[in-house]
Length: 618
Image (cartoon, rainbow, N blue to C red; front, side):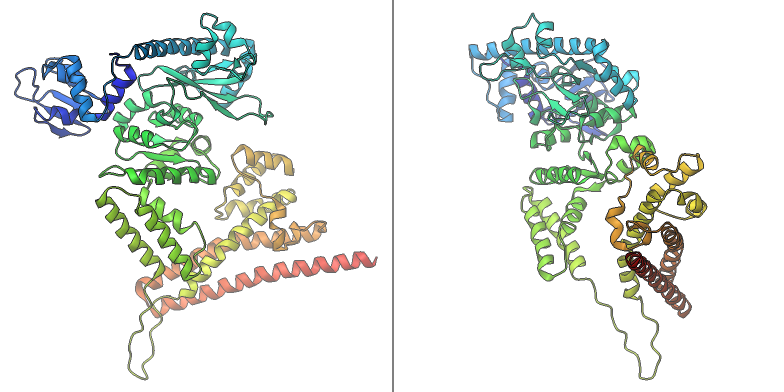
């Protein structure tokens, strides 16, 4: 019979080394490893270690070293085949029967490894040719250092449809097609799969090339996918492969974590920034097999997907895929990137420390599940809230482990009850004629603060749109904006551009924002606010005046809201008459502020209507 390397790897993956060794040797947990006195020589202090993640044992005293099969042969005295059969029975694997076809398949796979290794060597050589200039320019734009480019083996696939075939003429077309390097369509001549693309090799857990990922270099080409991976082949199964696992696995033993990102370029960007323990699925959602591979490395991998809607959908697909597989101490953690950003964007904008801060405070799987379902639909009626509970319990029912299922059910029920049935405010009894103390808290304050959060964001975006529509006004209000406590980072970018003497032109300022990974606001989206500076054909003097008033309101609001929030918190702490009076005074100011905002918008609309009427009469 023929036992392929892939079958033996599967056998080792299904058997926990420490559980086999502990049957005859007493093991003691020590961090990520186990320790014991070596069974191969006499010793008084333990120097024998067992590492399940790495899949081997080692004695620092006598040098004994091996995997689970070697343990069965050296310590148990079994023959190789007897060891394999015993372990296979334990793992639920069928030992391959003697079959000449299996031998031919193993030989074929060895040949395919040769094809892919030759293709990788050729692609790397092409990167340095004149035709590879576009690929080199792209790598330069990503600012990857020489070590990163060498480590990840970037190459270039030329544009010719038969270039690879000519270069690898020692292999026939059948092998090139079988390896996924060429495409055969009906009775037409086969052609190269990767053409005019930057290439990156995909490796198996043993570090052998099993396929390629390739990125398009022509940004104007819209009829082809941006990234293209090898198809499934006898060597490459995208559902059982994680990009960079052969490097991230050893790195995870040092850091104690594994980070899962969406794409290969994110992995490389993290590696260049010093985070070596990152992997990525092959363009699909995480599979059950990939989750098991991750759990062999660490108990709680960190999913770090993009902050856009697609990234969050990918995170939830991973969560729902993981729920049935949860077991004690094994789960997932989720990091949500800032909206519209991927890890590489964040590193470029704020440095690797910003990403490390997010990775240090991930959400639990349960938190992600609760927040996603809570925010998935409006919860305005009892029926809406009942729907939330039904969705949560449907997720719970997919969990196989009974203890984890019970704990999830209780925790989610508690959260739902606290959300759907908040405690009512108690009324204190008091004798007739005695003055009532100030209320414990004023729910109107919290309600109004929440209601105004949206208008604050809209006002901020409207002012930004106004500054881009009338960029000359930036010079007039630069100082006020620079000293204001504004949350939107785009204001700081515009002020920096003003200080740097950049041209105050709409297109130029929008380009500066885009270079910082920030989106310029669209004035049309905020025209409904009816500010004069956002209405088409607004007279320049009217636009300047209304924009100045809006900036004044925007600059004043953060200080007023902060003071109101502080007064509310102080009142809730000491319940004094003075604290209550201060809170009410600031709330009155806040209501007056909002009234000014509405009046200003109304006045602008009336003035514009009057100007339009006068123009029509003339």
